[in-house]
Amino acid sequence: MYNTKNSPRLGRAALSALALMLAATPATAQQPAEIKVGLAALVNTALPLHLAEAGGFYAKQGLKVTIVDAGGGTRGGRALATGELQVMHVGLSGVADINGKGGDLRVIASLSNVMRFVFFSDPKVRSAADLKGKTVGVSSFGSESDSAASLALRQLGLSRSDVTIKEAGGSPQRLAAIRSGAIAAAAMNEPAATQAQEQGLYPLVDLFAAKTPWLFTGLSVDKRWLDANRAVLGRFMSATLEGAYRGLTDEPWAKQILARDYKISEPKILDIVYADFKAQMPLAALPTKEAADNVLALLPTFGVTLKSQRIEDHIDTGVIDALIADGTIAALQQRYGLNR
Image 1 (cartoon, rainbow, N blue to C red):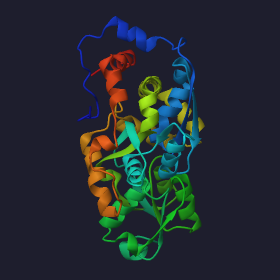
Image 2 (image 1 turned 90 degrees about the horizontal axis):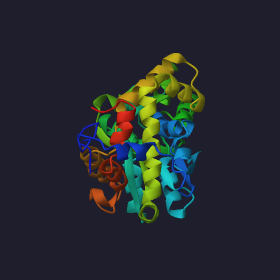
Image 3 (image 1 turned 180 degrees about the vertical axis):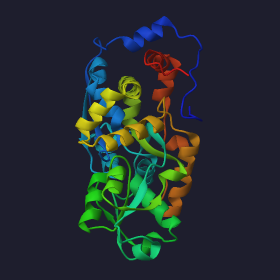
Image 4 (image 1 turned 90 degrees about the vertical axis):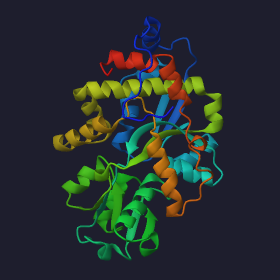
């Protein structure tokens, strides 16, 4: 099932008491399962993971979840096939790129269906002519930041051959690389985007302003692991959504976790980063068809070889669909006052 809006269809008008009890009951009878989740970078689209961990929702579901820095979406995506990671915080660009190179990954949920990057440059670089011949940083080749760089270059009337593309790490690392002069420009999202603006970097192309539908951040897994662990992933997604829902409705608590885990001390930046999360989080974590179609249509124009342009070869919403069908998501939304 694909979401056609930010909020899902809730199914039955009346929630059964049984569904509410199931959503509220700790998974004490279930075997604990360990899940290692990789982050492409410390960005606010990953906030539901941190909130679920801080709220004890993974533990309540009988899960031991470890969140680690994977050093870029594509790099982390490759670790899914080896079993080094079980879940990766990576968008459809990275998944489609890996699948085109022999992988078999699936996005099982979306944490953002809109292109979220602003393409910042050194303050001295204020035009396409200024950028031509210089170095542009991305987290890793084939990642969302790489796709964003291609989109930004296209808007500037440049191509990838007009610049040098260099792997430079996550948004915080790319911000530091621009400030040090190691690169001239890079795409960044929150909180690094606000920090870049505060530090005087130049917003050369604002990709976020266009609100382009784009499966920007997903939770992705290897298909073999997905097929063998759908029940475990159902518990994982239930806990992740509960973390998001508490964060959406308990602003002081969510900001406390943001400040602690993202090392944000300035209230102004904290307000912007939280508001961005609240505005963009897909309520049931469902990808939209338009967001997926845009990625798969545009990637080949950036030189990416696709295994297939069929959405189902890259996305599997079965885990979320099951949580909708059994009333779990509706019950959680009711508990946190998010039914609408």
